[in-house]
Length: 136
Image (cartoon, rainbow, N blue to C red; front, side, top):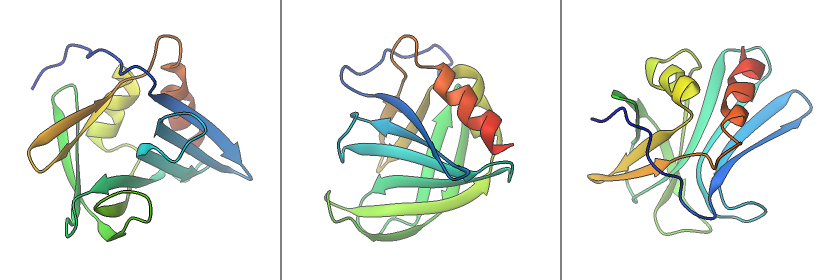
């Protein structure tokens, strides 16, 4: 595993939104349904709900950031917008892989042996820290 910061993907970024005490950090294309990974939390709870795309029948979300890895048991249901399943898992915000993501600003998801890296565009890495600050 590498700790060097990978390059951002053109057109993709991390977007932070807040509504009624709920914070959402989403990686994808702005103002579209093209979501790669979502993190949701209620302010101050210390819990994060992960939302990710996976192959049909998958039962885990496998994340990596800067050498830290974690496999989270997940519930899956068929995605209405993409091939495969929409996976969800609730985890502690202080899980090592999420804390490494908080420090580095990027995270990767492994699906069926393939690694997809979610890197912020220049200037938007602060969204990651703001999200974790809100979650508590």
